[in-house]
Amino acid sequence: MARQLLKGNEAIAEAAIRVGLDAYFGYPITPQTELLEYMARRMPELGRVFVQAESEVAAINMVYGAACAGKRAMTSSSSPGISLMQEGLSYIAGSEVPAVIVDVMRGGPGLGNIAPSQSDYFQMVKMAGHGDFRPIVLAPATVQEAIDLTVLAFDLAEQYRTIVTLLLDGNLGQLMEPAELPPMRSPRRYSPEWALSGAGDRPKRLISSLQLQPEALETANQHIQAKIATIAAREVRASDYMLDDADLVVIGFGSAGRIAQSAVKTARQQGISAGLLRPLTLFPFPEWRISQLAGQARAFLVVEMNAGQMFDDVRLAVAGHMPVRFYGRTGGMVPLPDEILEAIVRLDRELVHIDSMKGDRQ
Amino acid sequence: MITQLPEQLVYQRPRSLSDVSTHYCPGCTHGIAHRLIAEVLDELGIRERTIGIAPVGCAVFAYNYFDCDFAVAAHGRAPAMATGLKRVLPDKIVFTYQGDGDLAAIGLAEILHAAARSEHISVIFINNAIYGMTGGQMAPTSLADMKTTSSPTGRDVHLAGYPIKVCELLAQIDGAAYVARRSLHNPTEIRRAKKAIRQVFVNQVDGVGFSLVELLSSCPTNWDMPPVEALRWIEEEMLPVYPLGEFKNAIR
Image 1 (tube, chains in turn cyan, blue):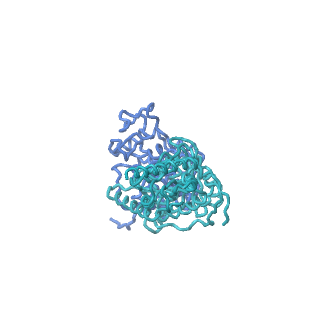
Image 2 (cartoon, chains in turn yellow, purple; image 1 turned 60 degrees about the horizontal axis):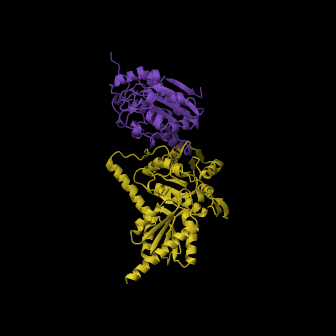
Image 3 (tube, one colour; image 1 turned 90 degrees about the vertical axis):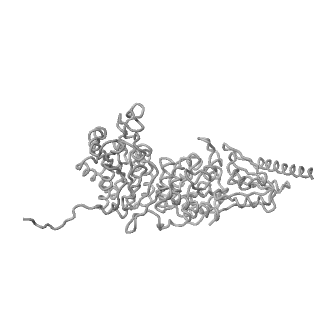
């Protein structure tokens, strides 16, 4: 299939449709609205379900309902809307039904603004709702990655009966670039063994997140945690750029990671041995890869479009073995490659200074 | 002379009702509502393709009592969940069973919009004017001056608002096909209630659109009354505020 010029939001919508999305439920919010509008046009054309809900609260519960039937269901929103969906996300996680959620992040807190941001890292990775659970969180940086990760999202959601979130910022939702869509698959005609379909002649089925007995709820939690451990062991994905001999490792996801790549390239041209690790999965986090890099590199620089959220996870992975610095912009400000380059140069000087101090002591 | 009559079974547990004891308090009318729904599922022959959605509240365990597929919704969200299920499974019968806190307080937006979209679902709305599961707090349907644990000196309508009349409200929505209020306080009304329950399911089988029946119900435990007195309280106190009848019937 040929590459075509595609807008991030619409590319995600079309990719979901092509991998057999049965039902989309959503509510307008900038900067993801094109996704909803695209679905409003395309889903009925294909005889599939589209509903514009009365709120994000309703939208996520419609997803929950359709997911209980074993259908491929998704919603999309942006930061404040995701806050409203947290109740439903928790119930979906507790019920262990698959669902795909797209969060096209904007500036916060509160109404914030509609400019691109990455300030939902905590919200999606750390606290997608009450109770112990973690959705799989995928972080594309290009329209092509957004397409590929959308395809992956549905497969992972069904394989693990979990929530999979596509976490991108308004930049990627809005930008257009050439990308290739997957071929069209027709919606699957199967009903998983746990799905609600009317009892017919079989025993009745129940989908619920309620376990009144503490022993039973602990067992259910242990089941979810075991699944999370399997996901953590198997599903880590990250992109490497010039890391083999890097002294200075820059880590950023999504747009921040993409912009950081330009800065790393320039730093190399200036003789600084920098490299870039760009996590594609924020949960599971490439913790092991970072620990490994902590054994070979000398310092880390985390770049995010927030006040330092993934930063915490990098520090946990590095475990105090070396300096971890942070450069971030908030409020919808997007860092320029030069700003990141400056942070890289600053950290490089810091390393030179440490070297000279060591030299003085010898 | 004593004639030996052939044995004839005239009353039995409906197939759609599971053979278990319920957790409901003595004198609570949830059991009656459950049985009526089960009888209707049997009579219409739809148990095999029915999916129920339990609310948060006393009826959260409804799935234990019906022998059909079930899901449990978050508080108030059953109509949204039912929307999702019914839209992807249009040939199945989807019903929600919701109390007054669930439907008329936290879930008012979901029920109004499900009605506005005329979702092809059946809604059984239990109005006992109180939050049962949490122990007797003021509900949106609590009567003026009604004493509850969160309105200990009586519901002061100037501070705590007036009772919400769900049927009257929903009857204004163009998408609502059938909206009726019935009561479970005596055998005559119970028979009428069953007819209305039957209608909300028949409407879904026939693809008529959003259908809801409100059932005035008793909560002797939280009303702090013996069961018989609680039934009398429905008749004397609730009926004047919540008149019975069909508020909307699109096929009439």
